[in-house]
Image (cartoon, rainbow, N blue to C red; front, side, top):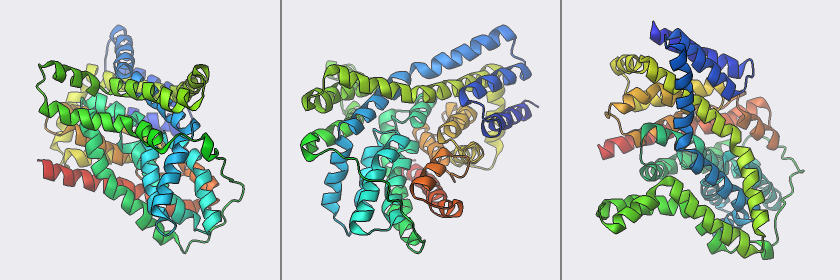
Length: 438
């Protein structure tokens, strides 16, 4: 009976968000309260559970996500993203433009949130389309695939970072695995899939002129690449160093401190403040203003993550998590595939990749807690599922449709198929990686 209550609550959550357009944070709180009552949690304990879910979920994530948003905002505002994209396009040339844009999207996508990266890179894509008479989708899809994969697979993006915290995975290891899984996903969904879209007639909008800084205003290539990718370098370095260094030594303790994702982001933001801010002639007040804008943009994401945490806590306190784990354990489906499938179903119903990932994580957490599945791979599996078949209930669908001037059918043929390829190839990559590691 309790499992049916949980299924009904998830269905009601989808209904509130999708059809009644209730704010996702409020919907999570209402469903958590409703589920707690139906599952028999005493009312005083229910209130405490909701508060605990909020606090525990945000406690380990606020620093990472907020500092990540600040870094991404400064990378965009300073012109570092423009410098990175321009440098890579020069390296690849016109004939390999799609591959250059794919790599650009991946590098830019690590520090930037998807929507920011999308809006930032659109002028560049259309400038190249008009300059070299290129097909807009063949030019744009590779970059969109890279941005999407980074958003769904790689910390410090909100959903992967939240899953790492929930499953007690290692952020550096997850990032390493994520990069390995991401490569075939973005290659197949990017340049290779884009070639199938050549026959599609295109009516590119001419209103997107590239709003760019002059070369004199841009930071150096070294500063741009180093600052944008510093979190990746630090996470990879410390993950490898922790294996080699004695944990009880002073060096081991220092490495352990730096390996903490919050410390990684703090180091990165301190460097960015100088290299992309003060060194470029910006005043400290201006840099702090950019950071303040970034916090405003990420506020609702933090609340949604916190709301998902309340539902997970209610399921844990009620004891239904163990019952769900026992039931799911009897299904003839491997845990990683099950995590992907749950996230994919919720994604198709709700539209939001973040909500899909967080909701699926709350359901699959009991299986991960048994220790029978690699938590780092489960983060990636759920992340891949959360990108499955974006359609009309996803804001990203309409963003892509309007910017590329497509019909709904054309958007499904291009954008929705691209997202589906990313999702399926991501799952296959996770399963192959599991076979190699175990």
